[in-house]
Amino acid sequence: MARSSLARRLGAASLLTTLVLTSASCGGDTDTKASDDSAGVDTSGSTDEVSGDLEELSVEEFYPAVMAAMEKAESMAFSVTTSGGASATEMTGVLEYGDDGIAMEAASTGAQAMEMVMLDKVLYISGGGLPLPEGKKWFKVDMTDPNSIFGQLGKASDPSTLFKAMQTPKEFELLGTEEVDGVETNHYNVVMDTAAYTEAMEMPAEMAAYLPEEIGIEMWVDADDQPRKFHQELEVPSMTGGKPTTSTTEGTYYDFGTDVDVSAPPAAEVADDIPGLS
Image (cartoon, rainbow, N blue to C red):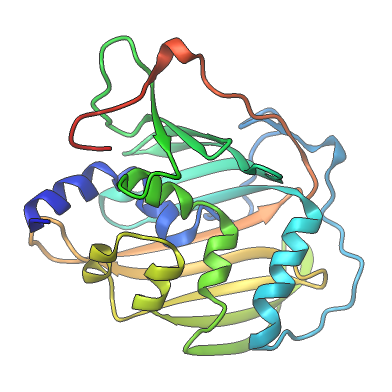
């Protein structure tokens, strides 16, 4: 694939880049919360209380323990803020694990303001500067299509994909304990090889050329092995040959067990294809 073609497609997909690099986990000011009626959140059945004692996870325990905790919770809310360059954005949403994969609803503000709905292995995107046909509000992406860059990037929005990438890190260290929104957590630093990271994240192999050799991420995990917060700084090369920018993303998971109600957009508002972008 020509470099110019790749840059054009990645530029059009910039609204999803934050999710690729952070797996749509969470972010921003840890005091920021989605409102109870935003992004389909009903917090009446949720809790942020923990039942266990805080214990250190080994590198071998980290991935299976955190994944088991998220699957046990079944659902959660997240908030993600990315700053640096033109990609500054704030996103809030909810997700739920089910037999057919993840159901997710999220909305963001900023230069790439957008809405996302994920249901039955289909990703719907609205906004973000997409050149949608007249009368259409949403772009439909088949996440099982291996030839779709949007499908590949959409798959990375599953938090389990990020934790899979952490399964065999180059470095893994407990930095100490800290409170996150009143919950005691262990603060870990995880460093991953970029080639292994992009493979685990099912990202296009060409994207590795636009990333540093190593990717680090800090994770805060509570006594029930639930992820509560993450922080990542990443030097992002310019797609146009200019100076690179440093992107900072930080976020939180909260309202574990919240009720989630996700519906697909009306079929009449959905475009199945955008030439050159799918």
